Image (cartoon, rainbow, N blue to C red; front, side, top):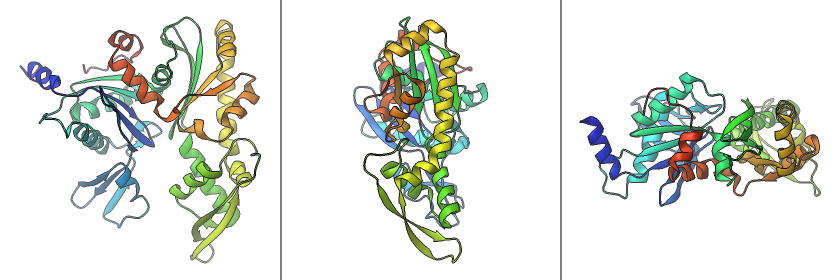
Length: 350
């Protein structure tokens, strides 16, 4: 009876593709396109346990809240760290998508992109959070596979393709052939780690404490993996650690590059290691096809050139790299046969 009721509600629900990222959550709605692209942040009043804001509005509160309000990121390194808040965040996005329709109790089918090397416990947490948020069926797919599909790579073909998906919390490196992953590396270092590098560097060299948002702005505006043709600089404002008073400094692209260099080196070194562990026939394919760079990390100035120099393999940045994963889930919503081939086996839910 319950399954029949769920199925009936499903007819009035819009199927969703979700890129559940550490930094941002993107939601694709069938026949509508990407309708949500917001930070994975939730603001909670800890006195009343009430959610005050989700997404962009909550992100504006980070580092600015009074003691009884916590602006929290429920995902750390691509996996759920706060189950209840993640469930509430997903419910908020699912309800927001269905707000314009007549559905009183949405029960959509949901495909979610998750990091490589996700454990069964972490996988079940994502499934349970989505079911608790109102999904009637949940399918999980590894983010680099979804990114490859979103970039229109024929993942079921016999030739090898290499995808580097660098998001906020994880960098997933995968060689894909015949619908599966042949060689891979999943690193818990990505865009957020670069922000932390900048915060540490500014603190150590300038005795200035800056926030995460300021560090991210520096990374986006003047950060690069190789020297720029024209030097850039920007002002950073924060708290002087010696006086405790506000202070402003000017940093250059060279200094920001220096701050991020160790993390970038680690990522590039793991790309080379993955290639070394790839069967020679597929390496030949990769050399011919080139590496595909997706995720927010693809937008770091000259990162693609740095990888190409280090590996000797051509590198191309995916078209609109930030939306590759969610576009991949969108294509899978319309191709159930391909979904059955590439999805992660469920832990128990259907």
